Image (spheres, protein in one colour):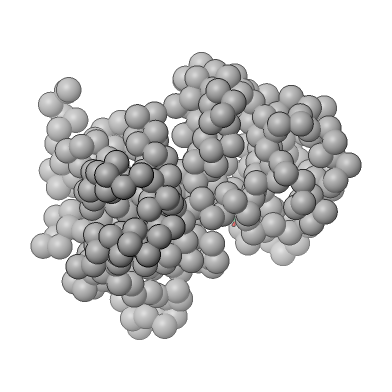
Length: 364
Ligand code: NCD
């Protein structure tokens, strides 16, 4: 490996670190076993790491079924504490990370509103994070601000408490752990049908401001021969940066506003809600005609019989409730998968993965 790749985060100033090519940033953020120390970007996961995490999640899921198994899991990180620092609204990501910590015996603290922390008194984000690192061994954070988790990881790396940070959603940019649970869901849904290579994914909705699609498109570069179909009203179409990334990897994609035309081709349909919290002016999103980007029971008839319907949730009306009873609707399972894959990620962050795999080998 190139010498420069071996340099660690602390060898750079923030400006130097921020300007590094993604590959070098990922190398700085990795543990010796290749798994992320800080999980900030989807690009930190290659196929081997994804397969390892998915396998670990499935082992944890099995082990957790029994009382003895739960006692084993809860002993693994009994000595650790995690701060869940979410200054943006969340139900699933917050609760699944909380559950993941509970499964591994980690005690948690939380700040869910900067107005009830010292940030309200004018404390900087840097000082807040530094404070959390004094009491906790892991910070799981969700913020409005793109790049904040990255800056905080860099800042903590040179402090006396360089603890890991997991990005649980950073602005409109990335949501790497959502992409992990999406990949885990795709893996589980297609594992008995030859896996998720040579497949077509259709993303629908607000692709301009939805971070989940951006991270998932990134992770899917690890799977051979995937076709990406981006379906949105023109103002909400996927960013050019994602298309450039797909081009750089020679991936096939279609950008369209015609959902019905392509629905029969998709193996996975990934719906998203309109992210109007990012509107620059009042009612901006409401003026865009999004009526063609919703799935009802009759639209599901156009889907392949073995395709799956996904959604990171929360949904509004982009998937009609009548679709929930269709066996192809996987969003509730997808949500629960989040708890298992996040448990696996935290276990791997703290190097407990081989203990879990050994326990699984000895008991199943
Ligand atoms: C997503 C998010 O926060 O980006 N939600 C989630 O984490 N499951 C999607 C959304 O809010 O629309």
